[in-house]
Image 1: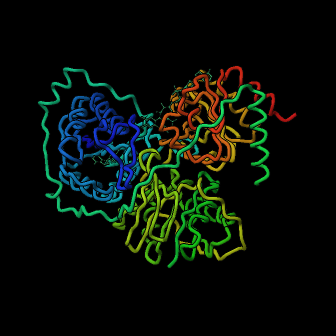
Image 2: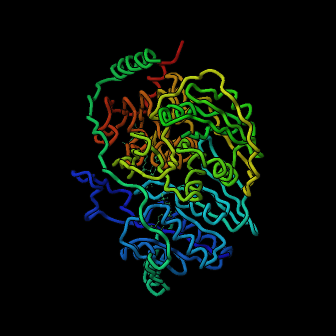
Image 3: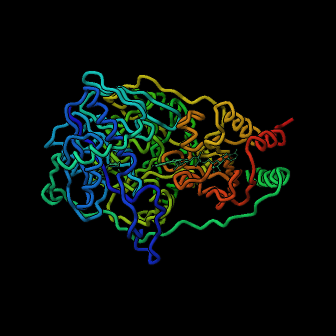
Length: 253
Length: 307
Ligand SMILES: Cc1cc2nc3c(=O)[nH]c(=O)nc-3n(C[C@H](O)[C@H](O)[C@H](O)COP(=O)(O)OP(=O)(O)OC[C@H]3O[C@@H](n4cnc5c(N)ncnc54)[C@H](O)[C@@H]3O)c2cc1C
Ligand SMILES: Nc1ncnc2c1ncn2[C@@H]1O[C@H](COP(=O)(O)O)[C@@H](O)[C@H]1O
């Protein structure tokens, strides 16, 4: 089985971003960038399948600027076999990303595509589902457990009411949730070795996909600021405040 | 033009977000509600919300329609609609992006405000920024954060049209596990009591359930508390969990990491109980008590438990 896994370079999840005062977007100058956290779980799952003898090759793909080479190197250091960077400086919409991915799938012919369930910058949670639809492959989103059984997958998904365990035939698309596994930190020798692994760089334009955005971002605004209120002195005071709040909630309903 | 609303349900229950979706879609056009999946006809009987002019019913082989079978049905229905709207629930998030890709439309998801039929607001970066988008496409495919909309009331009975059943998907469900607990729906509850890793054990976390019951609320949890096994996954509030917007949110032993704040910033009132006066949740709380939850929680339960 061959696995294609995706990794997006995003503003590190621990960075608290600021909206530019003129409303034109988010200020990312000097922000620390790293691999989308969900994608680290996707890479870990792919590499673990290979280590368990279930997968023969793990190819990691990132779409983004030259600097996205970093997240590919991270995935290679974690154990992926080779990398593909589709280079573009444009901020592509998820539909364009999914269409580029579908082209790569047509070339690479993987049996399984593993993605993160969402990218923590746009918080879209689109690309895996879009890719499955474009390829007409079955999908399992929000995976918290995954096992391969012959030509089928068994996936446990985190859903609104609890958990759903499903079986789907390969080829398939799976998106990783954070409880899928614990991503490894690559040891230094692996980081050194990653630089020797093959990494193909391709221009986004060469795939013949319409990359033009469909949506117009009119402006980006910050959330309403919340003011800190008083620190109460006792449990009795807390009980009194809560009683008042509960009474006003009951008054509304 | 008409608007197609995808009713949200799970394992035989219409979820409270369906009524809120109807409110969100109000004013966009003639509203049709699609109820799809096994038991759809029975669910449709409870879905005559005021403002909906027609209910479409598609029975299906699965209790929960799989993304591929539901997507196929929606693709067939799409012509004739200006908007297709679903909740940004696990059902809506599963099917909507693929539907949009199939139709060559860029979807807009997690919408918190519909400014005009083609102008929407959605959060990005865990709610630390809001994107104001417009689109000139003839079809708008949306998921909506239903917690920010009020539920539409039930109205007079409207015509119900039965469609062809959903085709079976390629995904088979082996097990569906509903988390135990008799609490109100987290995303629509007026009161949410959330706990963090500081509870330290499943047994201690259970006291939070007692407090929630005493307050008539739902229980939420941080990712750390879920990872530790103190709470089921569907209680998680945050960027990767549920989005709640209660009148009253009480965070106990919850630090208020930005990924957690992403899920509850919309609460009308925030209360923090924490040993650390510098915890980020305390900084955004309307009022806070600094102290040990081990002492405070039993006192609160005693104070609010109905005699
Ligand atoms: C991509 C990504 C997505 C994430 N998504 C989510 C999400 O959806 N939801 C979510 O919650 N988190 C999410 N997280 C995790 C998040 O960053 C935090 O790690 C998590 O919210 C912290 O949980 P906590 O508040 O229980 O624990 P901690 O941050 O460890 O805080 C514990 C708090 O308890 C207080 N405390 C300790 N002892 C006591 C006591 N005896 N009495 C009272 N207070 C006490 C401490 O002062 C502290 O404030 C995500 C992280 C990533 C990277
Ligand atoms: N530019 C990109 N490069 C590589 N993978 C991506 C890119 N954008 C999205 N993805 C993948 O798709 C997943 C979902 O992203 P999104 O739909 O944007 O939330 C991410 O976790 C990645 O695995």
